[in-house]
Image 1: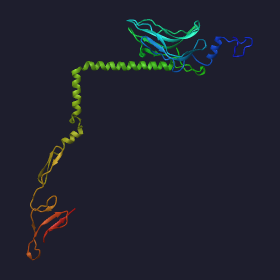
Image 2: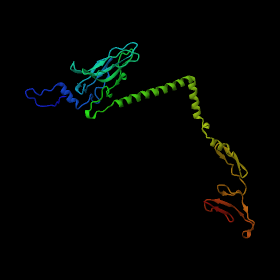
Image 3: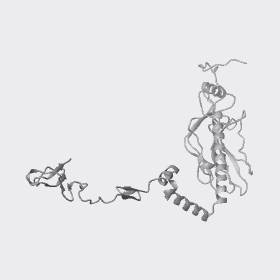
Image 4: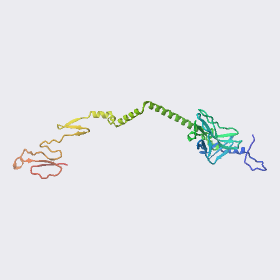
Length: 313
């Protein structure tokens, strides 16, 4: 295998460099792939998809050829079948015979279980797969929901990086796709099972009755009293006596009897006894004296000899 090197000043045409030499030189620095965030396929009008502005490097056998698109490029999608589905593939194709790199749609075959067309990786053609398009039976327009972005799958496309620090994103991409599929399948199955069970049990009338029962239960305060509180209420004293008079219970309140008006007793809130008490011994020369006993928070006033005044606070 001969040695080669470059680039050097040519003398009389002795240092001519081929296209392949330049492509291999570029391949020493960059990997195959699109630039990060560029060339994401989107839905266009009707049966079209759009490849936006962006750049890429691609080529076989360690060679790298530059691609750049400076504006949106609309690509038509073939009409759908009335019964069967189809998958198409959107690629950037390097073609040595055409001496160009172009965005193209590879049209798939109609099938009940369609498979996207394979990409080309030969010495004459080299593809970067940008996206897959699912064409449902009878479809008349392409929506974003039927476009699967494959730029991160390094097995078919990938992101341009320095050749020294090539990042393999295929494992990450496959994991995301697998996790997403499992999540959709699990949640769809659980929802379907739950919905079927509810639909079999509840008709419109039964559902209304169930709602009424729930609302009645929530409004029933008795139903939410604990057993411990039930026991306390059941064992509570229902009646009692105070000084021979009945103390009764009305709801949560106790009803005490009126203060008895017993002759000679002191009023509950102060004042003068109902009638006077007489002493059993003489006071002065007059013999037995009448004594009024008064309770008050104020000082003595308006009394006479023999009265008793009790002041309290």
